[in-house]
Each structure stands twice: as C-alpha cells, then as structure tokens.
Image (spheres, rainbow, N blue to C red):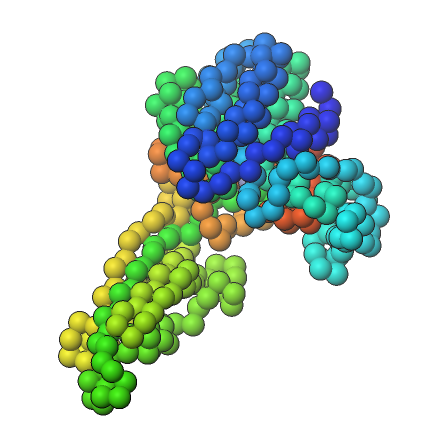
Length: 401
Ligand SMILES: [Zn+2]
C-alpha cells in the first residue's frame, strides 16, 4: 500500500489518550488502531501479539543476519487538540500561506520552519483538529518499511512494537522487556520513530527532578500581627526570588531550568511544586543545592523550620545508557548521511519512551518522521521526509550483521 494512503487511513482513527482514566489503554479507541495494525500485519503474513496496550510483532531474518532491528511508534495522540473526525488533506507547497479551512491559516510568518518544506508535498488538517502525525507518521514509516523489506528480502530479525498512552507519559508502562529480549536474538538495534524534522536525531534527554516546597506560616489576626505573624504567602515569594532565574521560557538549547508547576498559599501554609531539568547532572545537582540553601537562609532568619524542601529524582539523561552501545548511534548517523541528510544531534528538552527503554537495558535513540507543530491544528507532515525516513530505516537494517 502507498505510504500516504496508509498514513491517511491511520488519521481516521480517533486515538486521543487521557490522563487518570484507570484503564490501559486510557482510551479504548486506541485499541481499534492496534487491532487494525494486527490485521494489516496478518495480511502481510505476520503474526503479532496484542497485550497490555502494546502490539508486538517478531519477524525472523530471511538471510544470514543474526542481529535484530527494533522499531517502535505510538498509536495515541495528544489531548491538547481534538483528534476526532480528522480530515487530512495533501497539498503541494510552493511557499506562502496555506488555507487550512475554518478560518485558519498555516503561515511561515508564524511558523518559520514551513520554509524548509518548499517544493514538498505536505499533509495538513482542516483547521479543527490535530493531524496525528505524532506518531501515526512513525507507524506508517514502520509498516511501509516492513512491506518493502518483505518484498525485497535480505532483512535482519525484526521486532516491531506499537504502543499506546505515550502522550500521557505511560508509553512504556507494562512494556514487556523480557518478552522482547526472549524473542530478539543477538544485538538489538532499537529506535523509536517519534520525532519531528528528519534531520534531527535524538539520543539525549534531560536529567529530571521534582521538588515540593512546604512553607509553614504563623497566622495571627492582622490587627495584632506585629512581630508575630509569619505569612506563608510572603515566604513563598521570598523563597522563589532566591532561586536562579532559569525558566523554560528564557532558556533553550542545552541550558537547564527550574519551573514552577503549581503554587498555592494562604497565611498559614503554602506549597510550591517545581520541576528541575538539565542535560548536565552537575547542573541539576547545583539546582538542588540552590533550593536547599534558599530553605536554609529563610529558616536561619526565622530561627525555625519554616521552609521544607523535598526533592525526588524522576528520570535521567539516556545518553549514559546509549553510550554503552555506541553502534546504535553510529548506524543511524551513517544511514542519515548515506541518504543525503545533513543531520544534527538534537538533545530533547523532555523525556522520551526511548529513554525509558534505554534504562530497561534497550538503548533506544529517536528518529524523526517529518512532522511539525505537533499537538495542535497547525500540525503538518512532509510526505517527502516521511518517505526518506523509510529509506533511512532500510539503510540501517542493511548495516545489521
Ligand atoms: Zn509522539
């Protein structure tokens, strides 16, 4: 099947994932797409296993190769925009604005990266929903690669994995690493296909911690508060002002940040929740120390424990794990180059499913799919890039022994 037709079919499946549903997948509609993929695999003669919100397919090499290529993409889409009744449309882009419909315009004045796609065919929305290229483009690439591999032959052992609930941070929950390892002989070269522009290659994520700051005030009637009241709302502000001014909105590239996710306070008691992020473990440790020293400064001033900082580590930069198996990076670099792509190693200012897999012992960088502007109505997919990524995957497969 043509890859564009394949992708357009996937966009017609509503697969929005939602937090706190208590089910797996969080939206039963996600299963419909997993079942569709199971049928498509079966039509190609491939058996697959659907369990715990994952579809796994293992395909034995048809030649003398003994290593395994593992490819993963997620079926769900973000709840930030509607994923119901997606009406995707192909346009040939020659520059300027694209009228999406419903009064919405995709313009390079607002989205400069559009200029990188001049002369290409794009898939866009009708201005009312997201597109779902994140990550249905990844699925289309994997399925198209499989179809080509089966018809041309000479492929390594393959493990294909389609996951659910990635957008709510549960894309690797219940992932059966033992099942995968038991069915994948020799070295496993693992990649998620869940990125944007295909020139961006990701194998670094943040080191992440979360902090909860409790502020114990002392409430007294304002009329008789002199020298007695300790207003937690004032302390909350004081505490925050003692931290370095690195915020998500004023940092980029490799700079880390400290970000308030919520803050609540009355005179008696206040609470601030932070996330701390850095690519550099040392910088993250420094952020933690600065929180503790802000706590100590305030407590020393009042000579009692007004502020209590609790810090929890959340996840680590996957680079350390990836470095244990450098050929997974080398193969991708070489394949991107071989296909004429001037790649950049682009650290992700967040976490990825591949990061979790890496810490499970399956080093797993992330490849792009050609999509842009994810999670909203301005999302679009570059068909030329999506097709190019199929070539890249084919080239990677050819390197496996
Ligand atoms: Zn994604």
